Length: 179
Image (cartoon, rainbow, N blue to C red; front, side, top):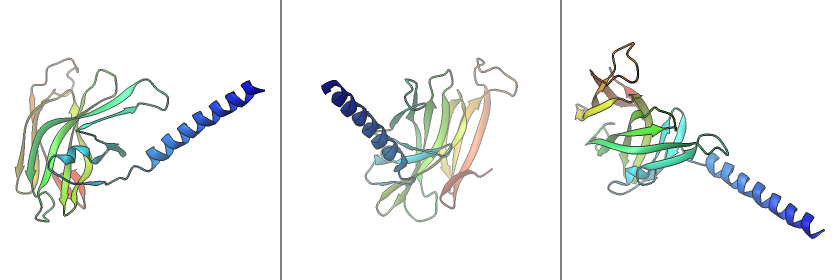
């Protein structure tokens, strides 16, 4: 009888933990306001429609519920500062990587929009897989990201050698490719 009670309590505890985890994941705000100097590294950014909460520039989540594989998102750098949305406040754009345990390392650019209360993370725009970032610049309200990629048809094992410049801007609160 004691074993049945202990098993019942154990099962309830596991179910309670699963419910708390699911509830916590469901309640991640799509745009969290964070304040402070480099605290934009602690904001929520949207990657492929999914909110990702960075903590000190890093996030690690299960690839699937109960999976040992992790999706790791990490601040890369190449940050630039300027007013991206025309509100007179300083915004920050930067690159980060995401690795899901395979051979790919995907590079993204995102922005943290300044507000009177702090920064609000935007969506992320994919630059490519295993690219070679060069420079990031702020020009005329846009972010220009320069990087090397592979030529069409080249294998992923080839060293990135084709120069690419991607221009991005804020449109209705979202980071979008400008041209």
